[in-house]
Length: 327
Image 1 (spheres, rainbow, N blue to C red):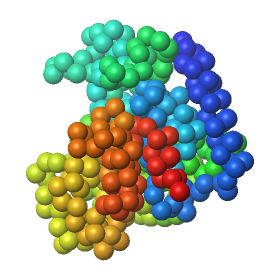
Image 2: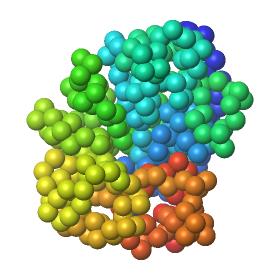
Image 3: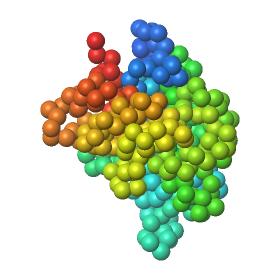
Protein backbone atom coordinates (compact mmCIF):
# COMPACT_ATOMS: atom_id res chain seq x y z
CA UNK A 1 0.00 0.00 0.00
CA UNK A 2 1.43 3.39 -0.97
CA UNK A 3 1.87 6.15 1.56
CA UNK A 4 -0.82 8.26 -0.14
CA UNK A 5 -3.34 5.46 -0.05
CA UNK A 6 -2.56 4.63 3.56
CA UNK A 7 -3.07 8.23 4.61
CA UNK A 8 -6.48 8.28 2.96
CA UNK A 9 -7.77 5.16 4.72
CA UNK A 10 -8.85 6.59 8.11
CA UNK A 11 -11.11 9.26 6.65
CA UNK A 12 -12.48 6.90 4.04
CA UNK A 13 -13.34 4.41 6.78
CA UNK A 14 -15.05 7.14 8.78
CA UNK A 15 -17.11 8.23 5.80
CA UNK A 16 -18.03 4.62 5.08
CA UNK A 17 -19.30 4.19 8.63
CA UNK A 18 -21.41 7.36 8.29
CA UNK A 19 -22.74 6.24 4.95
CA UNK A 20 -23.59 2.76 6.16
CA UNK A 21 -25.34 4.10 9.23
CA UNK A 22 -27.44 6.60 7.30
CA UNK A 23 -28.28 4.17 4.54
CA UNK A 24 -29.14 1.42 7.00
CA UNK A 25 -31.64 3.68 8.74
CA UNK A 26 -33.27 4.56 5.44
CA UNK A 27 -33.34 0.93 4.33
CA UNK A 28 -34.95 -0.10 7.61
CA UNK A 29 -37.68 2.56 7.38
CA UNK A 30 -38.54 2.30 3.70
CA UNK A 31 -38.50 -0.05 0.77
CA UNK A 32 -35.04 -0.23 -0.84
CA UNK A 33 -34.44 2.47 -3.42
CA UNK A 34 -33.67 1.18 -6.90
CA UNK A 35 -31.98 3.72 -9.15
CA UNK A 36 -32.73 1.62 -12.22
CA UNK A 37 -36.47 2.03 -11.62
CA UNK A 38 -36.11 5.79 -12.23
CA UNK A 39 -37.75 7.62 -9.33
CA UNK A 40 -39.95 10.53 -10.39
CA UNK A 41 -37.26 13.01 -9.31
CA UNK A 42 -33.62 11.94 -9.35
CA UNK A 43 -30.95 13.22 -6.96
CA UNK A 44 -27.48 13.10 -8.57
CA UNK A 45 -24.54 13.71 -6.24
CA UNK A 46 -22.34 16.06 -8.26
CA UNK A 47 -18.75 14.86 -7.81
CA UNK A 48 -20.00 13.08 -4.68
CA UNK A 49 -21.18 15.03 -1.65
CA UNK A 50 -18.80 17.76 -2.78
CA UNK A 51 -20.42 20.44 -0.65
CA UNK A 52 -19.05 18.66 2.40
CA UNK A 53 -15.88 16.80 1.35
CA UNK A 54 -13.36 17.31 -1.45
CA UNK A 55 -14.85 16.42 -4.83
CA UNK A 56 -14.13 13.09 -6.47
CA UNK A 57 -12.76 11.35 -3.39
CA UNK A 58 -13.97 8.05 -1.97
CA UNK A 59 -15.16 9.72 1.26
CA UNK A 60 -17.26 12.19 -0.77
CA UNK A 61 -18.81 9.32 -2.74
CA UNK A 62 -19.51 7.33 0.42
CA UNK A 63 -21.14 10.31 2.11
CA UNK A 64 -23.33 10.91 -0.93
CA UNK A 65 -24.52 7.32 -0.75
CA UNK A 66 -25.40 7.74 2.92
CA UNK A 67 -27.21 11.02 2.23
CA UNK A 68 -29.67 9.31 -0.08
CA UNK A 69 -28.39 10.14 -3.56
CA UNK A 70 -29.95 8.11 -6.37
CA UNK A 71 -26.83 8.43 -8.52
CA UNK A 72 -23.25 9.46 -7.84
CA UNK A 73 -21.23 11.28 -10.49
CA UNK A 74 -17.56 10.59 -11.21
CA UNK A 75 -15.88 12.71 -13.85
CA UNK A 76 -13.39 10.57 -15.75
CA UNK A 77 -10.01 11.22 -17.35
CA UNK A 78 -7.36 8.73 -18.46
CA UNK A 79 -3.84 8.28 -17.18
CA UNK A 80 -0.88 7.67 -19.48
CA UNK A 81 -1.17 3.92 -18.90
CA UNK A 82 -4.87 3.86 -19.77
CA UNK A 83 -6.58 3.85 -16.35
CA UNK A 84 -9.67 5.94 -15.65
CA UNK A 85 -9.31 8.19 -12.61
CA UNK A 86 -11.99 10.34 -11.01
CA UNK A 87 -11.04 13.95 -11.68
CA UNK A 88 -12.96 16.98 -12.90
CA UNK A 89 -10.22 18.31 -15.18
CA UNK A 90 -7.72 16.93 -17.64
CA UNK A 91 -5.27 18.88 -15.46
CA UNK A 92 -4.11 17.82 -12.00
CA UNK A 93 -3.06 21.07 -10.38
CA UNK A 94 -6.49 22.42 -9.41
CA UNK A 95 -7.27 19.62 -6.94
CA UNK A 96 -3.96 17.93 -6.10
CA UNK A 97 -0.47 18.79 -4.87
CA UNK A 98 1.11 17.71 -8.17
CA UNK A 99 3.12 20.93 -8.40
CA UNK A 100 4.97 20.02 -5.21
CA UNK A 101 5.35 16.30 -5.87
CA UNK A 102 6.30 16.53 -9.55
CA UNK A 103 7.51 20.13 -10.03
CA UNK A 104 9.22 19.41 -13.37
CA UNK A 105 6.40 17.55 -15.10
CA UNK A 106 4.31 20.46 -16.44
CA UNK A 107 3.88 20.88 -20.17
CA UNK A 108 5.03 24.03 -21.94
CA UNK A 109 1.69 25.69 -21.14
CA UNK A 110 2.43 25.40 -17.40
CA UNK A 111 -0.19 22.72 -16.71
CA UNK A 112 0.15 19.22 -15.32
CA UNK A 113 -1.95 16.83 -17.45
CA UNK A 114 -3.28 13.60 -15.96
CA UNK A 115 -2.56 11.92 -19.30
CA UNK A 116 1.16 12.43 -18.69
CA UNK A 117 1.16 10.42 -15.44
CA UNK A 118 0.73 6.73 -14.67
CA UNK A 119 -1.84 5.54 -12.16
CA UNK A 120 0.93 4.71 -9.71
CA UNK A 121 2.23 8.26 -9.98
CA UNK A 122 -1.24 9.74 -9.44
CA UNK A 123 -1.53 7.62 -6.29
CA UNK A 124 1.40 9.57 -4.86
CA UNK A 125 -0.63 12.79 -4.91
CA UNK A 126 -2.80 14.26 -2.22
CA UNK A 127 -6.25 15.42 -3.33
CA UNK A 128 -7.27 18.87 -2.14
CA UNK A 129 -10.42 20.96 -1.85
CA UNK A 130 -10.92 23.21 -4.87
CA UNK A 131 -13.03 25.93 -3.20
CA UNK A 132 -11.88 28.05 -0.30
CA UNK A 133 -15.25 28.14 1.47
CA UNK A 134 -15.62 24.36 1.75
CA UNK A 135 -13.70 21.56 3.48
CA UNK A 136 -10.67 23.23 5.09
CA UNK A 137 -7.35 22.38 3.52
CA UNK A 138 -4.91 20.51 5.69
CA UNK A 139 -7.53 19.04 8.02
CA UNK A 140 -7.29 15.54 6.61
CA UNK A 141 -5.80 13.64 3.70
CA UNK A 142 -7.45 12.47 0.51
CA UNK A 143 -6.35 10.71 -2.67
CA UNK A 144 -7.49 10.57 -6.29
CA UNK A 145 -9.39 7.30 -6.79
CA UNK A 146 -9.45 5.05 -9.81
CA UNK A 147 -12.87 4.66 -11.43
CA UNK A 148 -12.84 0.97 -10.57
CA UNK A 149 -12.38 1.85 -6.89
CA UNK A 150 -15.37 4.18 -7.06
CA UNK A 151 -17.54 1.48 -8.66
CA UNK A 152 -16.51 -1.11 -6.08
CA UNK A 153 -17.27 1.31 -3.25
CA UNK A 154 -20.76 2.05 -4.57
CA UNK A 155 -21.54 -1.59 -5.29
CA UNK A 156 -20.24 -2.62 -1.86
CA UNK A 157 -22.44 -0.05 -0.14
CA UNK A 158 -25.39 -1.17 -2.24
CA UNK A 159 -24.85 -4.74 -1.11
CA UNK A 160 -24.61 -3.78 2.55
CA UNK A 161 -27.58 -1.37 2.62
CA UNK A 162 -30.06 -3.00 0.24
CA UNK A 163 -30.18 0.12 -1.92
CA UNK A 164 -29.30 0.33 -5.60
CA UNK A 165 -27.50 3.62 -6.04
CA UNK A 166 -26.37 4.17 -9.61
CA UNK A 167 -23.29 5.74 -11.16
CA UNK A 168 -23.31 8.69 -13.55
CA UNK A 169 -19.86 8.92 -15.19
CA UNK A 170 -18.87 11.81 -17.42
CA UNK A 171 -16.24 11.40 -20.11
CA UNK A 172 -14.11 14.55 -19.92
CA UNK A 173 -12.73 15.88 -23.20
CA UNK A 174 -12.94 12.61 -25.18
CA UNK A 175 -11.72 14.15 -28.45
CA UNK A 176 -8.69 15.61 -26.68
CA UNK A 177 -7.96 12.19 -25.17
CA UNK A 178 -8.29 10.54 -28.57
CA UNK A 179 -5.70 12.97 -29.95
CA UNK A 180 -3.37 11.87 -27.15
CA UNK A 181 -3.75 8.24 -28.23
CA UNK A 182 -6.16 7.49 -25.37
CA UNK A 183 -9.63 6.77 -26.81
CA UNK A 184 -12.15 6.77 -24.00
CA UNK A 185 -15.30 5.13 -25.34
CA UNK A 186 -13.95 1.62 -25.89
CA UNK A 187 -12.24 1.68 -22.49
CA UNK A 188 -15.36 2.89 -20.71
CA UNK A 189 -17.55 0.14 -22.13
CA UNK A 190 -14.99 -2.48 -21.16
CA UNK A 191 -14.81 -1.24 -17.55
CA UNK A 192 -18.51 -0.77 -16.92
CA UNK A 193 -19.31 -4.05 -18.69
CA UNK A 194 -16.90 -5.83 -16.39
CA UNK A 195 -18.96 -4.56 -13.43
CA UNK A 196 -22.32 -5.51 -14.90
CA UNK A 197 -23.46 -2.23 -16.44
CA UNK A 198 -24.49 -3.54 -19.83
CA UNK A 199 -28.18 -3.19 -20.63
CA UNK A 200 -30.30 -0.06 -20.96
CA UNK A 201 -31.95 -0.62 -17.59
CA UNK A 202 -28.66 -0.82 -15.68
CA UNK A 203 -28.25 1.82 -12.94
CA UNK A 204 -25.93 4.02 -14.99
CA UNK A 205 -26.04 7.14 -17.13
CA UNK A 206 -23.07 8.02 -19.35
CA UNK A 207 -22.70 11.73 -20.01
CA UNK A 208 -20.57 13.96 -22.21
CA UNK A 209 -20.48 17.49 -23.57
CA UNK A 210 -19.42 16.01 -26.91
CA UNK A 211 -22.16 14.62 -29.14
CA UNK A 212 -19.65 12.69 -31.24
CA UNK A 213 -18.49 10.74 -28.20
CA UNK A 214 -22.05 9.67 -27.39
CA UNK A 215 -22.60 8.71 -31.02
CA UNK A 216 -19.39 6.67 -30.94
CA UNK A 217 -20.66 4.79 -27.89
CA UNK A 218 -23.83 3.90 -29.77
CA UNK A 219 -21.78 2.80 -32.79
CA UNK A 220 -19.83 0.50 -30.48
CA UNK A 221 -23.10 -1.16 -29.49
CA UNK A 222 -23.79 0.52 -26.16
CA UNK A 223 -27.39 0.33 -24.96
CA UNK A 224 -26.70 2.36 -21.82
CA UNK A 225 -28.64 5.52 -21.06
CA UNK A 226 -26.74 8.55 -22.33
CA UNK A 227 -27.02 12.22 -21.39
CA UNK A 228 -25.91 15.07 -23.63
CA UNK A 229 -24.50 17.89 -21.52
CA UNK A 230 -24.96 21.44 -22.75
CA UNK A 231 -23.38 24.71 -21.66
CA UNK A 232 -24.15 28.37 -22.30
CA UNK A 233 -21.88 28.60 -25.34
CA UNK A 234 -22.48 28.94 -29.06
CA UNK A 235 -21.79 25.33 -30.04
CA UNK A 236 -25.00 24.14 -28.35
CA UNK A 237 -27.41 26.71 -29.80
CA UNK A 238 -28.42 24.48 -32.69
CA UNK A 239 -29.86 21.98 -30.21
CA UNK A 240 -32.06 24.51 -28.38
CA UNK A 241 -35.27 23.93 -30.30
CA UNK A 242 -37.89 21.23 -30.62
CA UNK A 243 -36.21 20.03 -33.80
CA UNK A 244 -32.76 20.18 -32.28
CA UNK A 245 -33.77 18.14 -29.25
CA UNK A 246 -35.52 15.60 -31.45
CA UNK A 247 -32.14 15.13 -33.09
CA UNK A 248 -30.46 14.64 -29.71
CA UNK A 249 -32.84 11.74 -29.09
CA UNK A 250 -31.02 9.91 -31.86
CA UNK A 251 -27.93 9.46 -29.68
CA UNK A 252 -29.03 10.22 -26.11
CA UNK A 253 -31.81 9.47 -23.68
CA UNK A 254 -31.51 12.74 -21.76
CA UNK A 255 -30.02 16.21 -21.63
CA UNK A 256 -27.97 17.88 -18.92
CA UNK A 257 -28.17 21.63 -19.52
CA UNK A 258 -26.75 24.38 -17.36
CA UNK A 259 -29.68 25.37 -15.14
CA UNK A 260 -29.52 28.98 -16.36
CA UNK A 261 -30.46 27.78 -19.83
CA UNK A 262 -33.78 26.57 -18.45
CA UNK A 263 -34.43 29.81 -16.60
CA UNK A 264 -34.02 31.70 -19.87
CA UNK A 265 -35.80 29.14 -22.07
CA UNK A 266 -38.08 26.93 -19.94
CA UNK A 267 -39.80 25.55 -23.03
CA UNK A 268 -36.72 23.38 -23.51
CA UNK A 269 -38.10 21.08 -20.82
CA UNK A 270 -41.33 20.41 -22.68
CA UNK A 271 -39.53 19.95 -25.99
CA UNK A 272 -37.12 17.51 -24.38
CA UNK A 273 -39.95 15.52 -22.82
CA UNK A 274 -41.79 15.46 -26.13
CA UNK A 275 -38.64 13.93 -27.65
CA UNK A 276 -38.53 11.29 -24.91
CA UNK A 277 -35.54 12.88 -23.16
CA UNK A 278 -35.05 13.27 -19.41
CA UNK A 279 -33.85 16.65 -18.14
CA UNK A 280 -31.13 16.75 -15.45
CA UNK A 281 -29.72 20.31 -15.15
CA UNK A 282 -26.56 21.29 -13.26
CA UNK A 283 -25.45 22.47 -10.68
CA UNK A 284 -27.46 23.21 -7.53
CA UNK A 285 -25.34 24.49 -4.64
CA UNK A 286 -26.52 25.57 -1.21
CA UNK A 287 -23.57 27.97 -0.93
CA UNK A 288 -24.18 29.57 -4.34
CA UNK A 289 -27.91 30.38 -4.41
CA UNK A 290 -28.92 32.98 -7.03
CA UNK A 291 -30.23 36.24 -5.57
CA UNK A 292 -33.71 35.71 -7.00
CA UNK A 293 -34.27 32.78 -4.62
CA UNK A 294 -34.61 33.22 -0.87
CA UNK A 295 -33.18 29.76 -0.13
CA UNK A 296 -31.52 26.74 -1.71
CA UNK A 297 -34.70 24.76 -1.14
CA UNK A 298 -36.79 27.39 -2.92
CA UNK A 299 -34.54 27.11 -5.98
CA UNK A 300 -34.81 23.33 -5.95
CA UNK A 301 -38.61 23.44 -5.65
CA UNK A 302 -38.83 25.90 -8.54
CA UNK A 303 -36.94 23.62 -10.92
CA UNK A 304 -38.23 20.26 -9.70
CA UNK A 305 -41.92 21.05 -9.29
CA UNK A 306 -42.73 24.31 -11.07
CA UNK A 307 -40.59 23.79 -14.17
CA UNK A 308 -40.91 20.01 -14.06
CA UNK A 309 -37.36 18.78 -14.51
CA UNK A 310 -36.60 15.13 -13.84
CA UNK A 311 -33.62 15.45 -11.51
CA UNK A 312 -30.81 17.66 -10.27
CA UNK A 313 -27.05 17.60 -10.12
CA UNK A 314 -26.23 18.86 -6.65
CA UNK A 315 -23.24 19.27 -4.36
CA UNK A 316 -25.61 18.84 -1.39
CA UNK A 317 -27.49 15.56 -1.96
CA UNK A 318 -28.98 15.50 1.53
CA UNK A 319 -30.81 18.78 1.00
CA UNK A 320 -32.05 17.81 -2.44
CA UNK A 321 -33.21 14.46 -1.05
CA UNK A 322 -35.21 16.27 1.64
CA UNK A 323 -36.92 18.48 -0.95
CA UNK A 324 -37.73 15.56 -3.25
CA UNK A 325 -39.17 13.60 -0.33
CA UNK A 326 -41.33 16.42 1.02
CA UNK A 327 -44.94 15.32 1.54
